[in-house]
Image (cartoon, rainbow, N blue to C red; front, side, top):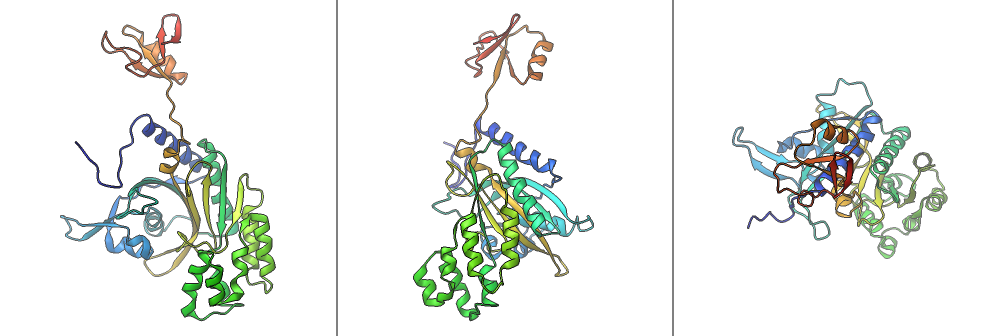
Length: 364
């Protein structure tokens, strides 16, 4: 019996076709907004890839020795860093901002119990050269529009401010550096007792989470000194008028370790966990300079597995002797035509529920 390694799977028809249609609709929406596709290599020199991945992501990479160069290569566990490399090197001459989209397989060294898949399909967009409010709002709207164009309804978005605690700790709520990481963890876990033990001044941040408008108001009230004013004003401008439900969890950091001032997660009813994630970040150039960027990644496998990208089968059986132009005309109308190649072939065997006859289409 042919077995696959743990964390890998085959996708069979009609679900593989459904996945391809989903990807085409997502990328088609991105293309309509000016995001042109790049197709990074599946493996790179490990040293270069590791410098662009944060430590947690770098540990996820599968490594092997290249028999040609005798150097260590790594298979990408995430495509965002690769798109950043392309923008910073081969497209460094391109006027900013540059809008890029991508889709491809990513591979993790290990998986968790909650997310056992080691191989996944990542689809996304990156706007490189800006991390302004206008740029972030565009990226959020493109992500939402792409999902809606793919037929994914009942969406919601959860915003976070990844650098919130750092900003407060360096300003109005000064905190010793040795306590900072522990405070981030306790806030992320919503551990009121742990936060109180470290610094009770940060306790209101736990309550400043929930439906966007109410949570935003609580965060504004907490920001008496105005240290967060520009972030909160920008966050409101991004979320205002979105066509989906919005929530705010200002101290959520899990999965947002490399984002700067904004992060967001996308959810769909009927899907466990996130279907996408994005935010603002920086790209490091080879000369050490940094460039702002904002983007998102979508996880197609979760949508397919939840049945939200439903398979479509509109298959028409074309009997032996049918004029080729008749079958071509039906394809032009959107039918999938399946030719009968042998006399004993049947519509049922070819998963066709309609047959093309001289009189037109009839049920099988």
